[in-house]
Each structure stands twice: as C-alpha cells, then as structure tokens.
Length: 257
Image (cartoon, rainbow, N blue to C red; front, side, top):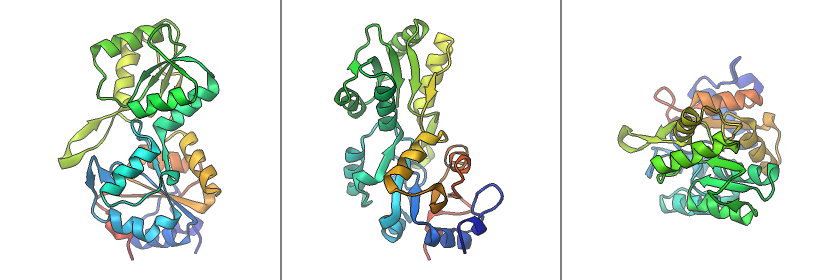
C-alpha cells in the first residue's frame, strides 16, 4: 500500500487501521503538539508510546509561539517525551526568522516571550517600542491594555503587522482553553482597523516547508498527525500531505499496533 491509496479524497486517513498503515509507510511523521501530544503540561494518553514507536521518523510541527526548540525539548523531556531540538519546528521562531529575512535589521516591536525576543536580537533585529517598522505578535501572558495600545498605534502609524500563528486558543488541562496568538492579534486588528500583513503557522505553508526541508523529504513522503482540521488538516491538504486527525473517534493510542 502507498500513502495515496490509504487516504480519502480530502487527504484524511479515515480509521485506525488505515492510520497505522500510513504511519508504517511514511518516511517522515509530522506531529502537532498542543492537543495531540500534550495539553499544557499534561501528557496525552499514548503520547510517550507513540513517540517511542515512531520517534526516529518524527518531527514536531507546532504553532507554538512562545518557546524555542531547545527550551521546549528540555520541557518535553521532563514530561517523558524524548524529542531532540533539531526535530522541532515552531511557528514563533519561524516567524522571527521570516521577519529578519524580509526586514533585515528592522526596528521591531515584540509582543512575545523572552526566547523569541532573544532570537530576534540574535538575528540582528532592533527590538524596540519606539517607531517600529514591524509589530510581531506571538503568545505572551504579558499582553495587557498598555501593550494593546502600543501595538495598535504602531500598526495604525504604518508598521508592518506580523502574526506568528492564527490560533485563537489551544486545548489546556482539565478541558480549559489557553488563549493564543490569534486572539491577541484580533484585538490589535480591531483597535487599529488594520488586518495583519503576514500570518505564519499552520495552515500556512511555511511551517510545513521548513519541516520538509529539515527532513529532506517531499510532501508525498510524510504524514501529518494533529487534532485540528482547520490548521493541521487544512495545511497538510494544501501541500498534498495525508493527515490523521486525532480526537474522540481516533484517540492517539489507537495509532499503536
């Protein structure tokens, strides 16, 4: 069997048996993180075993916009999930890299975590709230009314409005939601009257292409495993990547033989 024969007309793998066959056939496996392997700090049932079974071919492909790969790798290791930093592709870090490539040395307002700010400085962006050329929005619990006012006024004055990912929330522990980058960006867009100029993260293709480049594989050689049809599923489908959607009908543990 090939990856092509095991998926439906929309690229989705329909059942547990087909999913296991797809995973065996794939040369690379792209795993979403939040909602698929973890919920905040809670490890989802079967995640350790799935990574142990498929880890040699695995790459985490996440809309996470607060961590760097090294820090996330250490945090996951503490929860018993063994994923090397080189096998982690994150929307926040990729967005910072894109800003540095598109606007070299730009004055950049960072509504972001310390690891992303450090990455921006390492790439020679000038991190400042004064007359920025770019406003980069990622997930940060430090977002407040003052930050909203600074960002909205900078965007209204002409700064490029860049968003690390479109997610408004992701699943947290005990069924609670965790507000995400897209929710913060929506507030800035509403206040400034301007939509983002660039949005990174799934379902946009940049994150998928970064993972494929790192694996050295083509889209037809990998499979996407995630919980969100609007990001994991839609993004994979755009690039012709088969996808397995985890949920009540197909729990993560069902991927184990």
